[in-house]
Image (tube, rainbow, N blue to C red; front, side, top):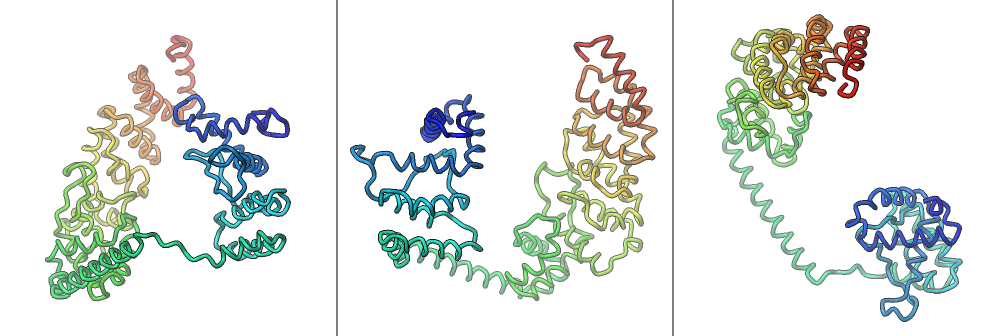
Length: 436
């Protein structure tokens, strides 16, 4: 590698050429011990244009396919399936110089054609084209080549016309399907607005292929573009009216990793209702409970309205989330309510703190990932620190043989009472150094 970094002596050049040939021969795919070397070489070659230039001309100097003579005309250079290097805009300068200075016309043409073939950002297209034109003025052969490329007709694959016809057929079919769907929806706008046609509301929600948390903010615009504004407005009103009654199983009550379509349109409906001024202080206990159930189906974080729901309907949220926490606690890491709770607003965490303290005091969960979620949430609440400090010493002793659990509890202990935690660890190391 020391020789390769400079490549200014025969050993370095031969080594670099050999390893490039090894890579093109797919040896790195069968020799696992060469993987690290290949990564180092890729990094080295990616940072050194002069090394890429050396390898480029080594490849160009190889004999023609008949193996009897060197290349006399232009041939594209293939770097193989697993190349250690490739050319980029960083190589334009030396290619431009070599297109003028190389002694053999085939090499000048190769450098010139490679210069024009390198992908460049849109903002540099005009600059590179101007450089290509100036470059072609230095050599009649380059000029002829440049003009041929400029006037060359775009290649049309023999199957191209058939593919174009098939594409048009598919486009016509999509258009007819859209028109049929739009006609069907327009005939049932009132039923959609009332929330009665849940199947249609689900279809409209899923017709925008995104699960991003901000989907509700863009779906009206997307539906307007795909269908029309009247259908988009009817869908929003239908979601708004249906969220109180849609079926909404809790995460542990349904099959794992299966998205509840009814819960999704329920979440959309609450978001629309909140945007239109819904006040959670005035909703019924049943509606508040339904809202809390829907919140458990959020993808990456609780909905923005969860804080308002907790503030006005805390007991309902606590009851629903408590059932989910207990279910998550007794199963492998679900990343449902417990997973969302780690990054939830403090008011939501505080509402759930009594349940978290109850389950953690009863004993550790079977899954250490669940334990980590619970401890991380409680650690963020100063009011729960006393519980953690009381439990940590005993749990460290009980979990001494389970290093993952011991580490979690010892980190909690160290955060709460560093002197006692360090002293106990030092005593344990002195007593049983190898295992500790």
